[in-house]
Image 1 (spheres, rainbow, N blue to C red):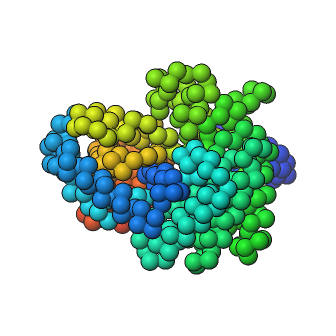
Image 2 (cartoon, helix red, strand yellow; image 1 turned 180 degrees about the horizontal axis):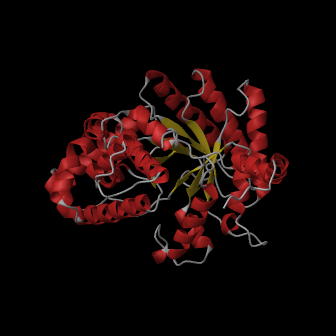
Image 3 (cartoon, rainbow, N blue to C red; image 1 turned 30 degrees about the horizontal axis):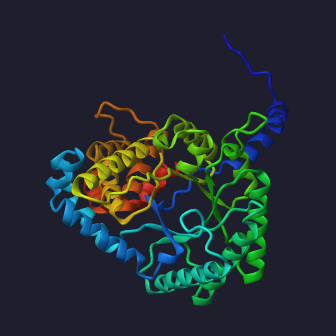
Length: 422
């Protein structure tokens, strides 16, 4: 029995006319993930404490904390309850990281971590800090990503925040071109108009300093209930990403402002409180497919004091880092140099757990070999490749390992991550 279709080319075209505008709108709003390197953390340092060698000072302080409180891999593993063999395997990587590249992303803090010190002091501090880091960038000793967090666009601090941002740009540009990794953080956003105001400020600063159009981008710090649930029942943060008109590069969770705003008692304010998890789930949904990255916040339990106190703080920090990595937050905040050892320990172990299986699955996928018993789809191969790329970017995985075990290099990983293979 033969059945002939009855729809004609004109019918297909008519359906296409109905569907195409939505496809175009979707492609514009959700262009896909940003595949460039994402730092695993952001170190927040008050502007008054920032010098050109701040990264090196943090690395040295982190190594000293290890030497005093956990001089061997076994001691570190026992102090925080990690597997000794796994910790020993990444121990050389951790120490090397702290020696050569201790801070991946640095934020000069002129907001909560800095406070109100008066206009004269803030003017001087922002100029000094930014100039020092800009010079370090020229010399190749600055972190690969850096910038500043200025005061919010709320009425009480708007003029001060904009002045600080203006002085920061002027200071950086007086040294040389704006570094590629330069980014600024907009805190305490409560309204769509504040996002629009930031877009306007960026455009005006670009014109004032002769920068290319859309050169300036910013992160939105999610630390108010108004970012997560609007009076209309919608999630404003999703709208804010679109209102940023392509300038929003990240959403960073503010643990303590957010939990305090919801009335959580101080003793229970935490990165893992249920209200924090809810907010971060909304952030992840809003950012998915938009090229906007997400970052968890910080813990205020710092590894200082006697050995027992340091070990307890390390155990907490290591667990929280692993927790947000497992939940798809590949970046978090660090507030003290002694948090760096557990930042990299948890991160490296995360990317090395099951690495052999991941590389074998990628090899089978690329070669078409289905003998492994798992038939991976393009979306799974994309996730596997993205995972490996992140491990390479932070130093947990080497290209030699990928080449020897998967049989290909970074170019194939890029193609898989971008869905250009399969």
